[in-house]
Image 1: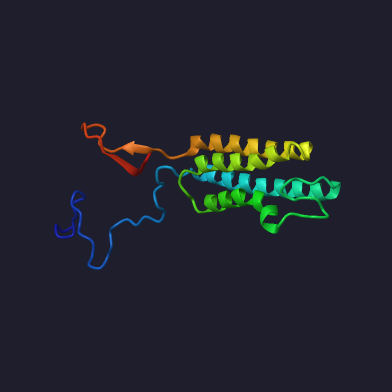
Image 2: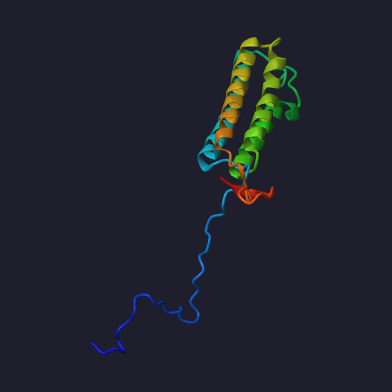
Length: 172
């Protein structure tokens, strides 16, 4: 074999003109405060289930003739705004889960406390329906608190060199 055709494996040739050698990121890196993908799916399913559970309470209330405070009696129902109020926090949490919002676990615990208020007020009017509402809110709180384990946390960038700067968007 002639020497001109022999190639040395240790040398690399530059890429031909017009060829891009940079790597492209197809997916953004997670930010501190966001939920891991699995916990985001669990959170979205949780709040959809809360919406379904409150719809079941609504249906049961109508079928049994027991009026919750937010529905009112059949003869004199509450305004539509008040009747839909228990669905606002779960709906906002569902939208937030689909949009990968930061601090979802904390907002979820707050939304479950707001949901629990509906059950607390119903304790005097329809105690068994109130128990279901409180159970749903309690389970939502428990799952939201558990989702803290799947929250990305910030990392100190300069931990080894003595600097105290922290990158808010860097996760571990």
